[in-house]
Image (cartoon, rainbow, N blue to C red):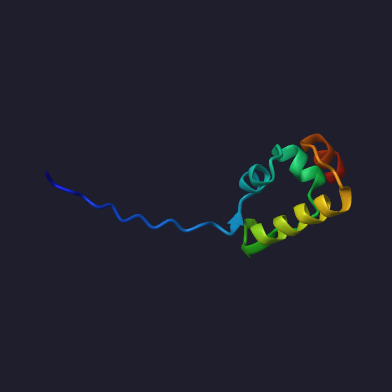
Length: 79
């Protein structure tokens, strides 16, 4: 019997397009645009990207300030 090895390297993205950033935060793009105070980074002209670390800090702040326990409570605090 032959054994085959598959060596896969996965690089986790740090910068997200708006649709990816919204999905990462669990929001629809229209809600993300309305609620998210994080400013995108212009790495090159026409390429505004959201830093995952900035998104994490925003979410952590919302969670820490809210004391919310449910998904709906957290979403309400985002606004």
